[in-house]
Image: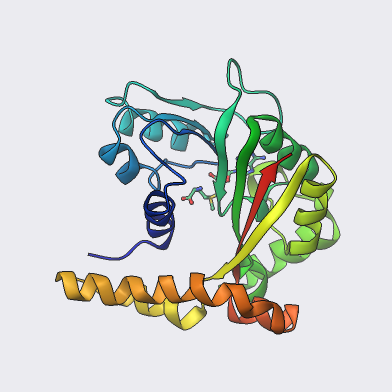
Length: 241
Ligand SMILES: C[S@@+](CC[C@H](N)C(=O)[O-])C[C@H]1O[C@@H](n2cnc3c(N)ncnc32)[C@H](O)[C@@H]1O
């Protein structure tokens, strides 16, 4: 089996009791909700709302989640109030912020939907910008960075400064609790190639991801640009005041 870094991340949230059976989770840009599925298998009554603007992904997610009675998918952009949804314990997103055209609206909306003391956790990727896989991607990022209006919502991608995300969150009623850095390019390549069969192999593969979480605490010592090249995926954890 391949170890999925985002699923591992959610597993860690459970281990650390951030997520329990009665936690209310809102996910923005939930795609097909695949990251959350193992969590729902473990806690079938968990209250989960996914918000996904891509209709075919939202439909797939709805099918995948149809047996979980407290799981719901909304097929829309995450800029406005989600109908009958408030006071979540956690609002989370994975690999979404770099695709969000109206960042401030999106981040403010993520704060609005959590209760006081609730968590806002956005994990996003700089890989498109720092390690583009094709000329087309490079070009798209360049347009997203310099002429954001030109790209439609569903094609939008750009380089996103960590400082900018933190500033918006802090100016709108949340405080930054911590930052984490992931996806060292060789670690990512290794995990894609490594088929972990035995418990020992699974454990060894997970150690890579655990190490990335652990080392994050001391990465403030490294220059920001260098750090982003080494770890092109960032998680910002904020708490609603
Ligand atoms: C790279 S995909 C990640 C999907 C999923 N979170 C995952 O990790 O597999 C980015 C997702 O963000 C969604 N997205 C982009 N802009 C959005 C917005 N303004 N509001 C909500 N979702 C958005 C896209 O439709 C897409 O499903």
